[in-house]
Image (cartoon, helix red, strand yellow):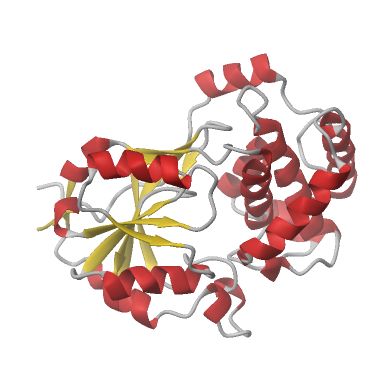
Length: 306
């Protein structure tokens, strides 16, 4: 048995342009005074490499800029089976999304092997022929998926932040291992991803700016599945920020529900997905989050039972 301890790792607060980044950094600094920070590095691959280059340990943990961590995380230890080579694995904990109540890897805490990160080629550094690595990390290395949740994801501080979070997941949850699929193959995608996509497109009106995440998720799925828009742009926050500025100039809070409903009808017509044109209202969204049970991320067969 090998006993992994969070305390044995460097911890990095990794932020880019999140409007709540300073507030969240103050929070983590109170809980983890030795936390290191990487801020404003363009490109997900480059940002994670910046963490690896500054890490003094074999492994480091990233806390995204929209996260508030549970202080109990610092004392976490996990007994892994001896046949698990942690040098080739990312340990992934769940994050709780305050907009829609989803609990999965999106926004959750990650523990990375330093040498792997220094040598990986993903996102902006990916080989153009490597489709799976263009907008995500998780297809070229083994992810050890923990079922415990040690952070809350607050990606709704502003309408733009909420829209961008929803849009990116609307794209990613539509893909199969990072690749766009034909419409006739769409419903063969992993059921967990499809269900999460539906929830992103329906739930969130009960929290501030949550309705913009709903709009973003619907727009992301529509542009991925119903147009020839280049999904590689999903990784480029500056591109997405420019998209948001255009949306902000055209759609107001008074008209957002009409736009969401229009997208809902388009998605139902094109993809035959089981959402309603109108998203859940605030009371319904709140009720959903109270009763919905997130699925397990799978049997943790790699954890020692000794």
